[in-house]
Length: 103
Image (cartoon, rainbow, N blue to C red; front, side, top):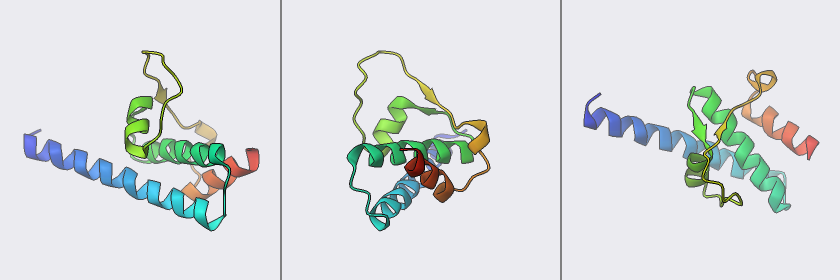
């Protein structure tokens, strides 16, 4: 892949995650979710869902940088986050609803 194509693919990927982040924030706002830990859970769950949709490998480091979150983990290990198979057919809103219900 040429440099220009590579950079374009990165830009598209970042834009995709940014759009998902905006949708999650809209969901949080519309549902008046004030609990910060639930907001973070929704952002993380939504990011994992989004990565699954484009068959992307989402690491904890990438999640933190794209979604503007801070790590509470000081471990040098990088975790790969995956969506549970039973949730792979759900829409973003369905995933977010389930996250709220189980919180």
